[in-house]
Image 1 (cartoon, helix red, strand yellow):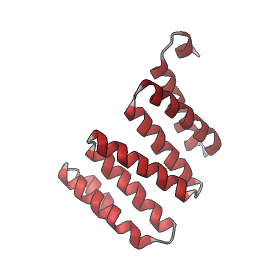
Image 2 (tube, rainbow, N blue to C red; image 1 turned 90 degrees about the vertical axis):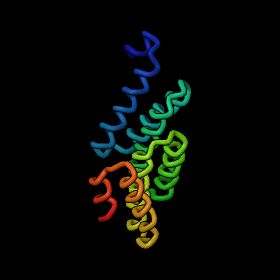
Image 3 (cartoon, rainbow, N blue to C red; image 1 turned 135 degrees about the vertical axis):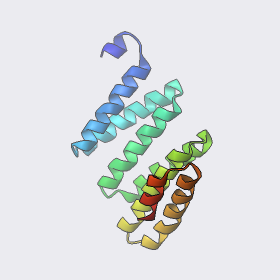
Length: 137
């Protein structure tokens, strides 16, 4: 409300995204989905790609928690495309791990291997040994 009064769309979007994070942590997935969607629209309007990617990623996590695997995969794929465009190697690696996590839950475990392998390679490129280890397990 304060951000609306002072016409601070960035602040409003950040706050609504934060609410989405809180709702997701509380397993209030409908509220989280609504918050992330609203924030994503605001970020798109003001041209904040990182804000958009964070809300789409949040939606992917919500969908995954609800076993809405197709929607989760679509969200993670959109996130991956944005990270590639932005040249964010860490974001790409993290998102590939998210995609890998989806496949065992869908009884397609062998399809997870390429995601983890590519994530491990990207973590290695940026010297992130913790990420490499996570992508190996």
